Image (cartoon, rainbow, N blue to C red; front, side):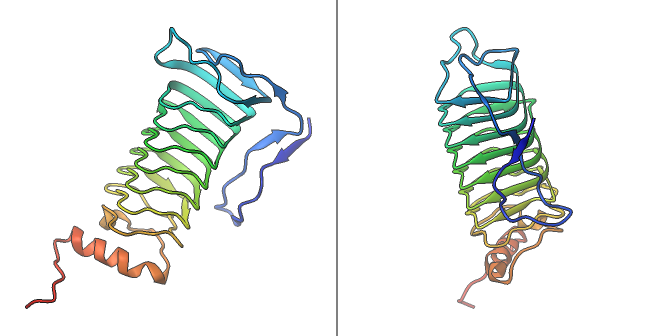
Length: 230
């Protein structure tokens, strides 16, 4: 079946994120998303009912599908598997993923405040104009992640692997990178005020306009005080 690529975000080169591939025609569907559900080439709109008998929805698979306008606030998923999926204008605030994997997935203009992605395996994942303040990405295993024009204030990246990842034109104020593997991480255009774990950003790349914020964070991590008074 002919497929279409999602909108290009401008990444180029061998380390560029690979976009989601969706078929030109998607079948409307979704309904009640319960455990042991497999959805393929499906267009889901709005918010499916919350399964009354499942506090944690387990073993859900989404492939080559698009979910638009969904409200999944506070729902918990265990072993969620998404491949070639686009979430557009969804409210995923407080959603918890456990033992889950995302590959070639795109979150576009989604609200994800306090979302828990800790330990999630993510490859070729885009967050475009998303609200991810206080999101938990601790110990995430990420490769070719791309955050663009997103709010990431006080996000938790502790001990995350951020291989070939770009966080651009985003607000990272107060974000914590303690123990993160940041080799290949690029942060151009992002606000880095009061970040934590700056000494673990070894191997990351910043722009000249970010030197003051990063230097201040490094001084703080090293216990060096900067004062006017002698």
